Amino acid sequence: MILDWPDCTNVRDLGGLTTTDGRRVRAGALLRADCLDRLTPAAVADIRAGGIRRIVDLRWALECALRPNPFEGDPLYTHAPMLGDDDYDFLPDSYGAMLEHNRPQIGAAFRAVAEAPPGGVLVHCLEGKDRTGVLVALLLLVAGVPHDQIADDYALTRGVDRQLMANTLDYLHDAHGEVAKYLADCGVDAEALAAVRARLVD
Image 1 (cartoon, rainbow, N blue to C red):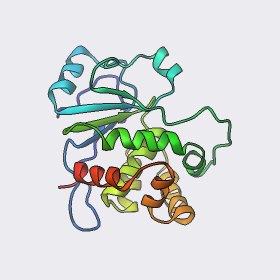
Image 2: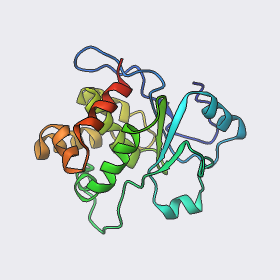
Image 3: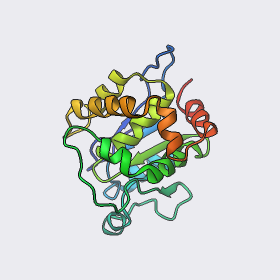
């Protein structure tokens, strides 16, 4: 797919990342982006023609109202806000607080990817870094991508520090062990995990 989306930042295909067992994430299977409200008509048409079968919008409802997604109301579109309304302190050096305080929302967003029709999935939030970064990290962990590659990919995002994701992955491992255990606590079952693996890796 041509990722020529004017006025969008942090847009990329996760295809090509390698897994611990020597496989690769399939090109076009998982894409990430920031807010899509400034997409040109040509870019919208390119997304429709390029194999994307689900767009998962991780923003709050208010963000969606202020900057509507051009695919809202389309069968492609799924709204799965990844943050609740709880007031909690963000940790300055990791996304650990996000992981702990938003388990139902994270589980729903993960399942939105797992249950998508065959084809590519595009996930995005407002800036394409925090919520998108965490969900993409969880998806890649389930696919078998090692921590260092996940942190390296996160570092390609504009306006982030690689160490933030590295710390988050360490936190997840230390606090919960395997990613499957954490996701089970979020309401994600083994079938959804298997669906994500089958979707992402050859």
